[in-house]
Structures are given as C-alpha cells and as structure tokens.
Image 1 (tube, rainbow, N blue to C red):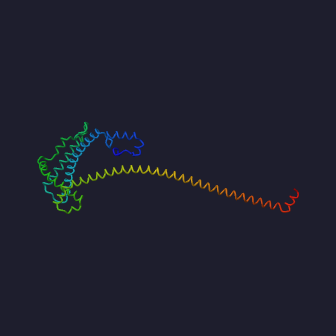
Image 2 (image 1 turned 30 degrees about the vertical axis):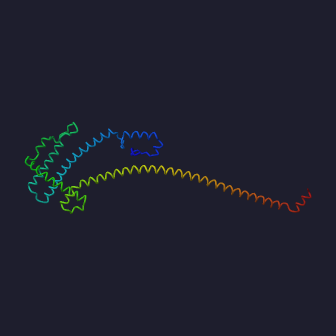
Image 3 (image 1 turned 180 degrees about the horizontal axis):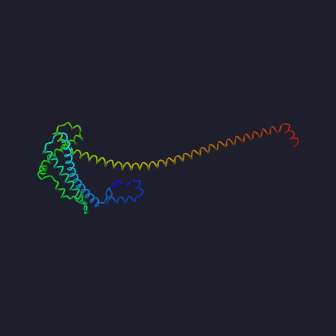
Length: 285
C-alpha cells in the first residue's frame, strides 16, 4: 500500500485477493508511487528542468520589462506633481521610446515556434519601426544611467516587500533594512519549503483519512449487520415467550370456561331433577 498511495484499496482487499497483491508487488519494481516507469520519469524530469529554465528566462525578461514600465509610470506621476530636471525627463522619454519600439518589433516579427508568416500590421515591418528609435547619443546616455536608476527602483520595491512581510521593520533604519533584506530570500524560500512540506503532509493525511474512512464504513456495516442479527434473534426469542404466555392464558381461559359449563350443567340438572322426581324415577326403575 505504501508503494501505491493513490490506489483505493485496503489491506483486507489484498488479503482476499493474493494474486492481485503479487501483481502490485511486481509493478512496484518497475514504477514509482506516481505510476511512472524509470525511463519515463527521467524524461519527465528533463522536460521539467528545461521548462523551468525557460520559465526563469522569461520571468527575468518580464520582470525587467515590468520594472522599466513601473519606473516610467513613477516618472509620469512625479512630473505631474513637481518639476523634473530636463536630463531626467530625456532619460525616461528615451527609455519609453526604446521599450515601445522593442515591443512593436516583437509583435511584427514572426513567431519562432512556427514556420507560418504572420500577416503584417498596418503594412509595417521591423525596419520601418526601427527608424523610430531615439538618437544613438540619447540611447547611450540612457544605457549608462539605467543600471543606477534600475537599482534604486528595485531596492525601493524590495524595501516595500520587506515592510509588507514584516510591518514591524518599517520604522527601522535603511541600513538595518538592507541587512535584513539580504536574508529575506532565504526566509521566503524556507517558508515556501515549509508550505510545500505541509501540503505534502496534508495530501498524505487526506489519503490516510480516506482509507480510515473506508475501513470505518466497512466495520460500521459489519456492526449494523451484527446488530440486525441480534435484534432478529431477540425478537424471535421474545415472540416465542409471548406465544407461550398466550397459549397458557388461552388454556387457563378454556379450563375456566369448561368448569363454568360443568357448573351450569349441574345447576340445570339440579333444577330439572328435584328430590321427589328422583324418588319417582327410582320406583319406576
């Protein structure tokens, strides 16, 4: 049963079907607890690793793009509430145009996962969109200042995450927050593993509860059958006693009626045959 936790069987089923038990023991030598063979499990693990690698690459790219868009949005908000230096304004405008051009080019290029050409959008191609890229000078200046600005933005987001995770740290100094921030990843990873372990324990407990429930229902059915048998036996025994008592009652009543009839017959005879009548009959005989 430990080798096949997903099988809905009990020890009683294995006891009643020894050949099926041998079959499970043979299968346990070739498949794991999920029902996969060793070669198939190996291929699945490789595919899972490849998928995780591609997912991490996509997440890094998407996180960077989202971070840059958040920086542009924050700049637009600041620009509406306060004066912004011209060089900083140029920096964010250049970055916004570069992001927009890159997004348009990605939409216009055919997909790398299919050989079919995508229909052109508004008759444009990637070369035409590339002409909208800002000047090389502005792009280089933006690239030089981007790591510093991106680092500041990411640090701000990390500190916000730290304050959300531990609100009591919000009033701490920035140096202490930065020190605690270095341990946040390990803490989150630890809690993630703990949550996964609890999920696995819950799944195991769910399987165990299901088996115990089936065993409980099986034993309950047996108890109900036994109780029905006892009730039937008790009812039959009580019925026999009742029938015997009724028989004794009717026998006594019949005996009483017979005695009453005899008494009535004697009274009739006494009323019919008086002492004079008896003497006359004796003389006649």
